[in-house]
Length: 331
Image (cartoon, rainbow, N blue to C red):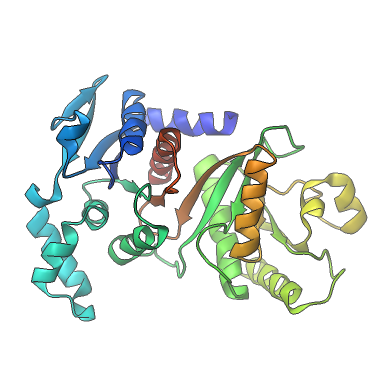
């Protein structure tokens, strides 16, 4: 877990303020308290039942404040309502409707980030990915120049793999179901920038397919090849190759046989899957059979950090995602 230890060290050195929308969930509370006690972040838990979790306002854990906020009694509620109304009135939202919407935990948390009261948000232990991401897109908005919100997983490997620093990055395994060539190129570029910003690692991108260097002919292969060309044209600074089979991307001997002119030479660290079906299956095989530890999905393309948990998450997952969100805010 050395690469993740680096993220923890960075978070401790310069902790950010992270808001968690699901402060009624005990997993979220436990993960948040662990992050706070280790000095990773200043924490706000959004919850109408915070007193049931033994939290006062504020509560001190090893000198780090953990704040409980009930949106319905918050001093920011009217400010958030006015801001949301200005943001969404073109969609027919009235001011009265805005007051109701921003009192909901997801929207309230996103408004905290938008208005600068928090540096990033984490949710999804209770809410669906659709609801969590929708609130982030509508309220926090897209980053400048971004047209797409996508995701990646940090896959912490159980066994050493040559030239990987024991971590791989899988994209997109949670968000974009069937990207076209342009979207696939955007996912690759966003993932490369995320990896460099989050980990300080130089990305080596493999655009995955069931074909390597034209070994198969199919429109699916054409899409990946076209996307690779788009990445090279838009970002000539990035090391990217495709289309490429997984073994050619990760094993030097296979790369030498299948792609002898490859500059990656079997040492890819960013694996871009051709669609969500392949990506989701791929990361779960690595996690369940390969014993890799999956951290994510980590969202990218937003103006400020907002991340989505799995509804099957543990307190440890919450803790890790807080650390990642802090590192994103720093980057």
